[in-house]
Length: 448
Image (cartoon, rainbow, N blue to C red; front, side, top):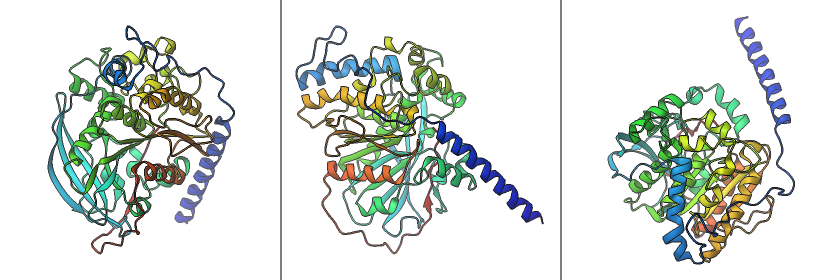
């Protein structure tokens, strides 16, 4: 009798959730139609403050790029922590069967310093079978390795605050139904078959993704009060972490130092773009639905505003950026200039039709605004005129898919196709199962 009551309650909860989800989907705006808003300003090669217009790639690199990086630090992100040496204090194999016999899992412990804060990162490295050198996709997770690799024997619990649903098995199907089939796990078998390594870590081990704990971490890192205009935000610290992980991986002969990509969704996409704008060792960027403060123009009239975002997440950006809420037109920089700082390296951006909050049209206008710098370097920058015609052969492209804010099979298919083009992988036979591999499934929790 009791079991029947439990099942009835679960069914009612499921029906209620389904009704709420349907209502939510109906109300979400669709992203359709032509671009109707003004183009990105100021023009990326025009005079900037006292700096005259740019006419050559050399002038861009020597004069304009340093000015823009300083302007983003002063007005949006705060300064990244100073680069610091990274020491690998532990490296061991993990017993994990979720790779379908196509590769192996290692966990590394990295120690470094972010300002005044000692940092310990637990890095999960998934490697294809064989010797390499393999191109690597560096990813920031939302829940840490113990939640990401459920069932893995001996994997470390994250030393950071994580969302309560990270280890809630009952909530995972619900979250997956909203945020996509791969919100919990990249398709590792496909990634490995196509010859890529994956390095995953939890950025909360640098700065917690929570206002109270995150602001306390940022005060420790910077030595500044939490409301100081120049106090860095978590996005800056998470961008810094991408670079420290790449530093640690650079000494491994199994990985190709000339084919290192950073991948991030949502807030982690913001960090991935910022990391590439300051770190030339990043060879390619995959930023999915990064929204305001990422690939989308701050001055756009669509999607989440600066005021809304900085109020909801006061730890993500510097207080200086929050001060531009409701007066974005006064910002001296906008995100097309951030994208331009990555040129001529390849960048893939993504959008979803039901994710108007991330303002896909604003992201396309930002990519269009960055294109003259790609042309300046002789690279094939953005070619498309709308969201509907991505060109994966271009060094800057943006695609739109059906659905919501999340990570789907289509997102990973596009990720791998873009990587294949720009990392020029030669055709190779599928990796053979490794008799030593064992498994589980990768799960990766996310909040918007």
